[in-house]
Image (cartoon, rainbow, N blue to C red; front, side):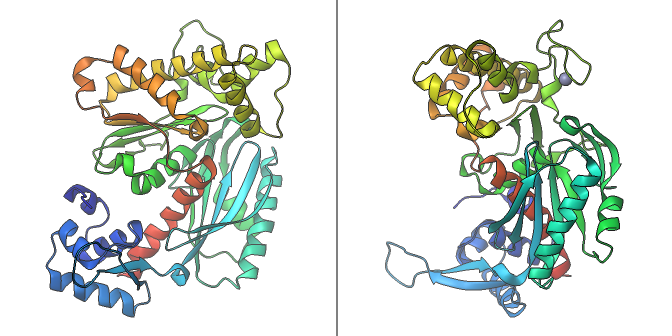
Length: 398
Ligand SMILES: [Zn+2]
């Protein structure tokens, strides 16, 4: 296992936190591997790991399978029950609630259709959260974390804008605490694309050791997130990465954002499904995901004009990605969100278009156009859980 020093640094500044985070993000890692990655002395690593074991934050798992002779190394893992979070993925269609654990395990607990009215939404969430919290007697729950399909002020917990519901400038924290006055644990909220990138960063082997990249969140619209020098760049108002609203055609269709010809009016799954349905009637399926899967299936079988429509979608995705590659000089682009449904050949097709059109010097360091490791729901829940557990870890080691 090879991780650049900078990745280890990104994981924390104190040695203890660095070792603990390394174990959290690489379950099954051995003491030897930690020594190699962190550059710490063997004895320091041994001392730290025994301290973490005595605090019941990590435990020793099975010995690693190894080909060579001698003793097999011991696997180290975070203790799942040491801390739990309630994670809430708010989607345009449904909201999913789950429990996230210190060892990154996510357990989905309930789901409901997302009410368009903000007060109804908060009441419904509070009802479900209360149920989960009471079921667990609050044991080890160290925070709640929301993922939203919109722009969120992370610091003040203000929903700046969720376009599909037209929620604008609403105080999430205040509304939530009005419903659940007993809640004293930390509350987190963030944009879904940034959370998805956070999850990919630690678990997607394809981008391991890469410190600059772009995550394109393809869903009803197009969102995004940016990794710059190993850090997710958020911008002063946390809205960086809204690539879906870059202009692809200055005179194109009007977008809800008031601009014209935005990227998402060409390549979101909402747009693509509507184009297909305009000439062929309704796509079968209970929700966006099923309908989009269906469309991909039809494109593979070359039914009606599905192939041509998907082909155009991939073309526009590549055109937008080239704008981002030329501007940002990234090492990777993940076509995430519902991009996890894309067959492998879609990435080849997009990759070829990128090679054809992007500036040659920037391509020298561009490694790949790739698929996400997680499906859309897991990515958001996983990212939401990581935020709670990152904070828990820092506090636990003080
Ligand atoms: Zn727009």
